[in-house]
Image (cartoon, rainbow, N blue to C red; front, side):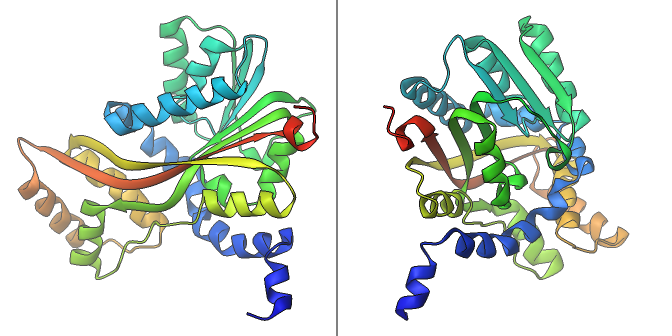
Length: 287
């Protein structure tokens, strides 16, 4: 590789330009309709042992690094059903939870009421339209397509007083059942792999930020009724531009019913996930 091209890798614009294709791939998944559909059983993920251990370890790492303290304010960007939001609320002074999906936030509100947590402000708004003059001790962002847009990383940093914590895909996201359906009925390879957190790490590195990165490998395991599994899969396929005729939908449902036991399908997704931790005071030489 010519020297000039090697030097380009160490410049932020190289990574910004590279991320544009990633951002386009994720654009269909920025629709609130997609996440309203997903919200119906999104928290089934909490039944996955790997997901529970992932979340527990991320919280432990944040506590060890001082990113969640009793007097802190935290913003949970694109918070979903608030899997992390409620854990922050137990540990910090105040939390702002923002998401584009009313369906997701309804699930969060139920959790807050059940746990009698009063220190969470919930906002239903598109992050791209959200404006605030507030800053937060910790900015937390997890598993959202917004992270495909590196320009948003600068926005996260601008509202963080000290910490930025990001949890995101890291190259592997293989749903064996969905891939089988894509190949068998649509003659396509379903590709949901993405450099994700690695792209973010490289961008921050090119800007001089010192970040720590930790990887997690495992399987997200779920089980649902046949109709619900297909509804989830169909939402993802349509967002990727698949054309699904009534006949094809019927064929897929019959295929899933044959795989089910008493109308229930068990399936899993092989994943690699990364957690990125940035302490701005380390960068500025204060600790």
